[in-house]
Amino acid sequence: MEKDILELENQKVQKQLTINYLTEQNAQFYETKGGFVGLKIGNEDYGHVNLIRTFPFSAPWEFISVRRLDGKQEEIGIIDNLNNFDSSVFELISKQLEIRYFMPKITKIISISEEYGHAYWNVLTDKGKCSFATSAGASGAVTKNEDRVIIKDTDENRFEIEDVTKLTAKELKKLDLFL
Image (cartoon, rainbow, N blue to C red):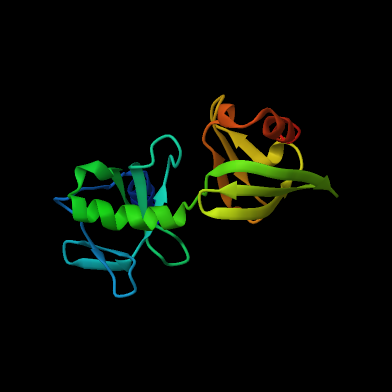
């Protein structure tokens, strides 16, 4: 009896450690009636699935985790590289990823003020004028490299400054106080 339980546990662990790569040959992605991404593998239809970039900034089209939508978010498999799929699947999946990882680009910093441990930002983005709050100090911004800055607000929204060298001296001075 104990041996059977250990064998079942071992099988469960092995299943969790195995990476199931999803390819055009073994996975069929489709658009659901609600406009989301669905997945069929063989005879099993998972319906609407969740797509998560494992490296959202450095490799946005590689190693995309495809997960069940149930509360456990169990991983079904990994898309090694979305570029290996035909253009219709690429478009379907990339559209969903762009919605999930929506990140306006800051083109101008109008003002940044600090009050009660928060920084209040007024900016222009490629999507229009925007105001948001972050934790004051460096915890509100993540720098990817010397020129690119990702700013996360208190609601977990992300904003990007693609190239800080394109900001004016006045804007850089405002930004430096919060990096």
